[in-house]
Length: 447
Ligand SMILES: NC(=O)c1ccc[n+]([C@@H]2O[C@H](COP(=O)([O-])OP(=O)(O)OC[C@H]3O[C@@H](n4cnc5c(N)ncnc54)[C@H](O)[C@@H]3O)[C@@H](O)[C@H]2O)c1
Image (cartoon, rainbow, N blue to C red; front, side, top):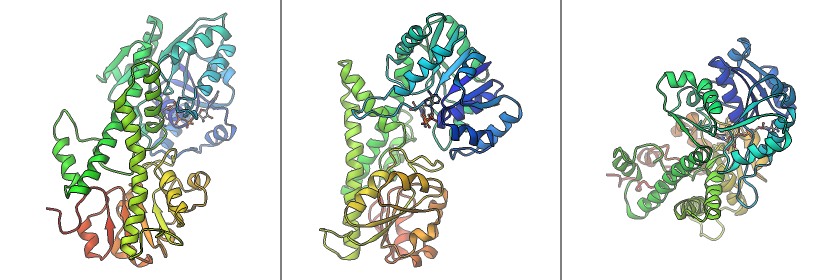
C-alpha cells in the first residue's frame, strides 16, 4: 500500500522504515529540512539500534523516500499516518498543535478520498476532532480517521515494530478497518493479536498501557525505599512477586524514576483527561506524585551519602565537589533525554554547589543543550578523572561492564551512588568503594 508518514521522528521514522521493509511504499514527510536532507544522504538523525540497516534496505528496495513536501506526498497516497509530536503543554495537557496543523495541511492538500491514521499518542476525542478539522478544511473530499497507537520502545524500536505483542486499531468505518487490516496483514498472518475497536477505546488503550507500566515502576521504587528502611532486598522481592504470573517480572526493577518522552507526559495527560471526564484516577495521580517525589528523594540521598562518605556535615556537602554522572539518556540504547532523570538530578546537584560532568555515549550533546551549567563528554575516563563522587543513571552496556578495580584509580574519592543497581555491593566493598544502590541491604547483610 502507498502511505505517507507525516512526522519523521522516533516513531515516524521507525514506523515508516519498518512498513517499507514489509513491502509498503512509504513517503516519510518532515518539515525539518535538516532531518530530511540527512536522511536523503543516508544519515540517521537519531540513535536507534538496527534502524540504519532497515532504512538503507528500504531505500535500496525503492519502498522508502523522504520529502519536506507534504502536499505532494498526500496527493500521491490514499492513506496518511500522522506521527507528529504531542508534547506536554504547560498545564500538563497534551499539546495537540502539531496534530491539528498536520490535519489541516492534509485536508488542504487532499485530491480525493483519504484515510488518516493517528499514530501519535493523543487524548480521547482527538480522532473525532481531527475528523472535524479534515471535514472543515477539505470539504470536497471524503476522510476516514483511524487510531493506531504505537507501543515501540526507544532503544528496541525496530524489534518491537517487527515483533509486536499486539496491533491496536480504532476505526469508525468498514473502509478504514479494512485498510488497517491490509497494512498489518503480515502480522495478523503470524497470529499477532489484532485488537479492533472504536476510536475512543484505541486512544485510551495507549494511555492506559503507559499508565499501568508507570504504576509498576513507581510501585517498585516505593518498595525499594521500604527495603532500604527495613533491611529487605528489593531484587529478591521483585523476583518473589514477579514470578506470580498475574504480576509478571517486567518493569519491577528500581531506578531513578520513569522518564522519557512518553510516561511522564502521558500519565499527567491521563490524570487531567480523567478529571475532566469526571472520572478522576486517584491511582494515576498518586503514580505521578510518587515518581516526582522519588526523583527528588534521590537528589537528597546522593547529597547525604556523599556527606557521610566524605565525613562532612549535611549542610552543604556538595559545594565545590566534582560529580561524574554516568548516563544522561533516559534509558540505554537511545540518545533521547526528554524527561530523563539526568535533567532533574544534575540540576539538583549543580544547585547544591557541585560541578557536574556527564558522560553518555549518545546523549552528551543533547544534554549539553538541555541542562544548564553541565559539562558533558563522550569519554568516560574524562568524566571519572578527579571525580569526588560518581552517580550512575543509565544502564548502558559499557557502564554496566565497568571494571571498578581499574577505573577506581581515576577517582579523587571512591564514592559511587548507583541508581540502576548495576554492581554487586559485596564486590564494591571488597574494592573499598563507598557504594550506595537502591533497596539492597548494606554489604555483609545480604542474606
Ligand atoms: N518516542 C517514543 O518512544 C514513542 C513511543 C510511542 C508513541 N510515541 C508518540 O508518538 C508521537 C511522536 O513521537 P516522537 O518521539 O516520534 O516525536 P518527535 O518529536 O521525535 O518527532 C515528531 C516529528 O514530527 C515533525 N513534524 C511536526 N509537525 C509536522 C508537520 N506538520 N509536517 C511535517 N512534519 C512535522 C517534527 O519535525 C518531528 O521530526 C508522540 O505523540 C509520542 O507521544 C512516542
